[in-house]
Amino acid sequence: MLNEVEMLKKYFYISILLGAFALSGCTNDEDDKKEMEAESSPTEQSFAIDNNVNTTKKEETAPIPLNLTQEQKEEYYQKYVAVIENINAVSDKDFELELEPITALLDEHWIEVEDFEKLAKERDNASIVVIENNEHYNPMSVPKTVTLKIGSKEANIIFKGSFDTQLNENTSKGRQLFSVFNSISSEAADANGSWTQLGYDESLVDGATVYNIAVGGKYSQSGIISSHTIAMEFHCNENGGIS
Image 1 (tube, rainbow, N blue to C red):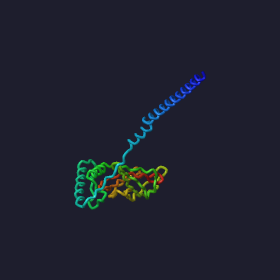
Image 2 (cartoon, rainbow, N blue to C red):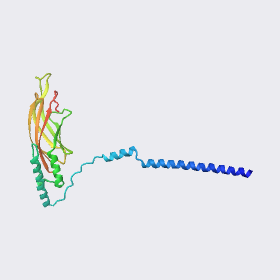
Image 3 (cartoon, rainbow, N blue to C red):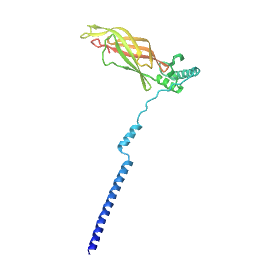
Image 4 (cartoon, helix red, strand yellow):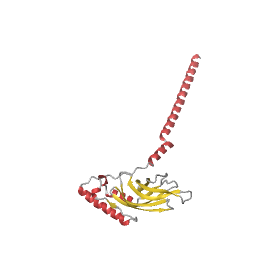
């Protein structure tokens, strides 16, 4: 009888152990399954990162200069001349593009004809923006910045006007007005371009409170010359400050 009781106890303990092992195995299998699903399924964060990568804007690269012999340069120069002539023939601008003399072209100016044509078309379509001053300056030296927008790039030209003012008691409460236009000068602010001022016209309007000045000149960059007439205004406030 005792042997039978002991045998029953052994079977009971063995069944408990087998049940525990079985439960442990199921739990491990479920955990492993969840872990594998988590690794295989992309998260919202991963999608956001991918989107950011795909929408990254590439910077425009500059044309690669060519290593040409003098004979090759002469051949390329004639091709550049043809490009300029073709653009001028169809352009609706009030100026024509020019090409620097072959002796003035630097090493970095010798590029593939397709790249040169792209630069020439961008110059032909350049726009001018006159930046208005937010502060007033001494009338003897008044800066004014003009931006040439050429393709995706910008080039700045700095102008400096010089004036005299005087108090006019005939105006209400008395105020300063322009009395003399002395001069205007200008130069390119960027090292990779040059600006040559050729002349100007000025007119005094609005009761001697505004000077309209149109400056003509030529801008040269990448061996291409474009002519521009840039109109700007200089304003005199009641205290003689010029903007």
